[in-house]
Image (tube, rainbow, N blue to C red; front, side):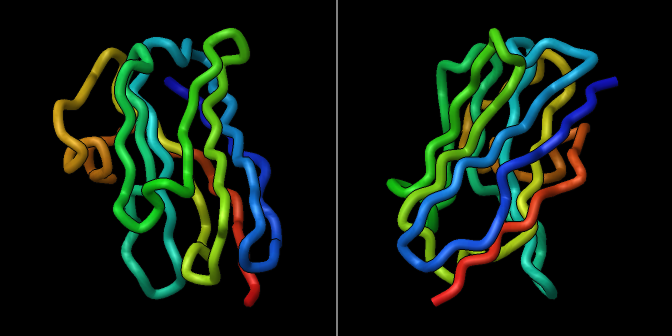
Length: 130
């Protein structure tokens, strides 16, 4: 089993920044492809960013490209989502997720598909006010 715990959500004004963290326990993050997803009320869960097992490749949703950065710290067994220039449309519950160990992807479509992920955290709320 892989346990994921998110932190770092909060309320910010438009144009502000937040950094989300996802601590991985019971498994090593270096062996996992991981992603960040978000879900706003009444909307489907959306892939935001993903990082391939080994950390060599990343993928981003068009709506966050250039504003969000996903990264992985193997020593801390943690992944991060740095979010800059936030706008009200970014308001959502943000979830960290992991694929099955050693599973990878070759396209951003797969990387950002919720159905490809096996393990999920409980989520952390991000609220951006205008």
